Amino acid sequence: MNLILHTSNQEELYCSLENLFNVRKEFIHLYILKHMSELKDQTAPFKDINLSYFLMFLSLKANRVVDFPDFDGITISHLTTRTSAQNIIEEPLYNLFETLTKKTELKLRLESIGLTFFEEDGKLKTVFHEKTVDWRTYLSGDEYPTAQMIINRLEGNRFGPPDKCVNGFLFGGNIYENGNVRHIQYLPEIVENILRILGKHQLIRDLCRELSPYIIKFAVPIDDIIFDGYKKLTLKQTQFRIIRHCLHYLSNQHYRSWGQYDNPIIRVVDERSVPADQIVSVEKVDPQ
Image (cartoon, rainbow, N blue to C red; front, side, top):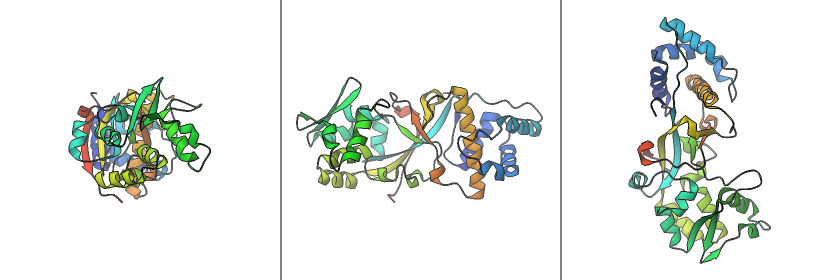
């Protein structure tokens, strides 16, 4: 990746946009100030934010033609639970299948109670005390919603393949305030679901004591990301949407009206894991 858009916070984003568009960040700031009210009231995917006009505004201020940058990477903020920051350095940010099948700390902890996983025909099979678990047997009882979620993550459904991707948020900050991930501060959701159905409540309590939440900021190529719910965007369409999100974010920051519920979810394509050299920063947070 040569040109990476850094999006952790407002100041970092202004500096990164300055670098990408090769203009003074004060010009971008001025654009936001002049158009705050119209920018902040836009709704995703923000198609009404006119990027041609944005470029023209910057061109007039810079006294030269400012083109749209062909940036090839962005940063994503991801919430995880680990025993230590050292563990994050030692283990890449694996997708779900690799987390449960490679020699990870979590895999070894689950093996201690007789819980293992193996991949077969594109699905992740669960073995508990040497017996393969058929999650469909739990669909007829009170555990139906949880069992269906496990099936969706490990085996897929008629609408698509297993959901094993690494995901996170376009912008940083207190991402644990987002309702989609608030519960992950204590234990990975899929692990809690599996252990609860299998009746391993004590291990759930033990893991919640052993693990701490961390925010991992990592860089990822634009080619490897998907906006949640939008799988068919081209590279250029993805770049345009990212910049529109940035302009909306900056305008709402000025109004102090942006919250984590506004933070767009970004998914890394299913087969990808995040190697250690793409991790930009690690921050331990206090559970809320």
